[in-house]
Every structure is written in structure tokens, then in C-alpha cells.
Image (cartoon, rainbow, N blue to C red):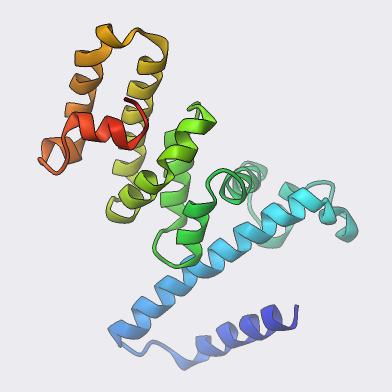
Amino acid sequence: MTLVTALYDALHALGPLGPTGDPRVCAALLRAVSTVGGLALREVAAVDAYGSHVEVGQPSAAALVQAAVDCTQAVASGTVRLARRLASDLRPVGDLLIAGRLTRRHCAAVVHGVRGLDANIVTNSLDAICNLAVVTDPDTLARELRLRAEASIAVVTRPWHVLRGQHAERLRSCSPCRRGRVTPDAAASDLGMV
């Protein structure tokens, strides 16, 4: 707790200094926002898992979040759900957030994009998901992961000989395929769809 208090005090000490106009300071602060946000989400997941929110008189981790940052119940519940996913099956995505390589919006896009997929497909595809997340904006990331998830679900539910052309056709419309960076079959392979 002492280290967190020192960080809090250091951040508040920056306020009165005013802007420097230095792009390196700007970039460092933006990375720090992602890092602190990732660490906070990791802590929310731990509080939720341990049930330690009760120690401070809060009935749930979402109530603790709501009280701490003065947000709506819906936002607080969404924060807890995101924290749970980043602390469990999407841990590498959370690690990228803590490293400052992704934003919280990227992480939410990944969670949305893989919703409903078989856990094994997500686990086997984490490297590809992380690589895509680092180079794609959050809105495009969510769309492309949903497109790939739909193709993956179709592959699981229909015979392969029927789908050989269908999954490739769906994947052709994703932007990396349109830009020629990856073929539809390679995109399907990246997400364990073939």
C-alpha cells in the first residue's frame, strides 16, 4: 500500500507543474495511464476473487468500484467483468495493457470479440489475438474478431467440405485480408478455425 500511496502522491504532484509541451512526457504519461489502468483492473479482479470488498463495507466488487470512481452501476459492473476476463483466460491481453501497449478500449474490444467462442479456440489463438490487438484500433479490432469468431463458430457447427469456401469468403472481407496482409486461410488458421 505504501508504494501505491507514493504513486498517488507523485501523480498529484505533477498537476501544479503544468504542461511541458514535451512529446516524450506526453507519450510517457499516456503509457502510464494504460499501466495504472491495467494494474487497477488486476486489483479489481483480485478483490472480486478474494471477496475482500466486504472488509470495507461494500457488498460487491462492483459497488467498491462505483464508490471509488463515482460511476454508474453499469460501468462498475462492466469494469469488474473486464477485470475478471483479463485476470483469467485473457491474461496476456491484460499484460499488454499493463505494459502500456494496449488501451482499455482494446481490451474491451477483445473481450467483446471473443465472446461466445470455445475457450480452447481463445486459448490457442491468444498470440494471434494479441498481435492483432497491438496493430489495430479498438473499433476495427472488435469487428474483425467478431467476424473471425462467426467464421470459427460456423466451422465448428458445419461439415468442413461445406465450409471450405464459406469461411474463406467471410474472412475475405476482414481488413487484413482486403489489404493483402494475410490470406483468408491464414486468418482462419490464426484463430484455430482450420
